[in-house]
Length: 109
Image 1: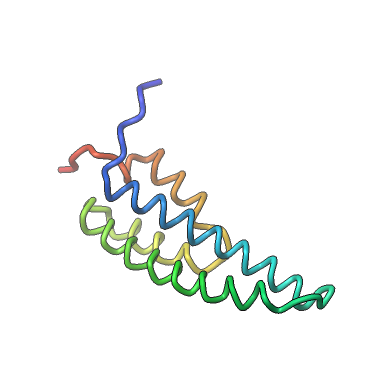
Image 2: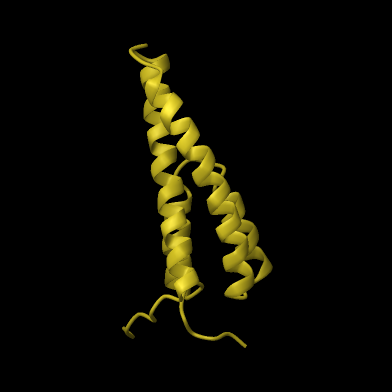
């Protein structure tokens, strides 16, 4: 198996944004469970709702910038943006992009 190609700096930013988006989604899901399940608190939804809103917007901007900078095919750019909608999908997408070399430092022709 060949050695993994180092990530492009924009690929690292995309990976970080994908992780933050998924982490805040998870926090928001926990908060919604606490709010509507045992009905103990709304504070977690208040906090993670705001954090996730910011993380979502940052992720979408970073995905578009990465698509342009790393010259992704159109389908990869669309998938990257759509992955922010369902919970936690940015994590497997980022791992798949990494395996396909879409986040790597190599130049594409």
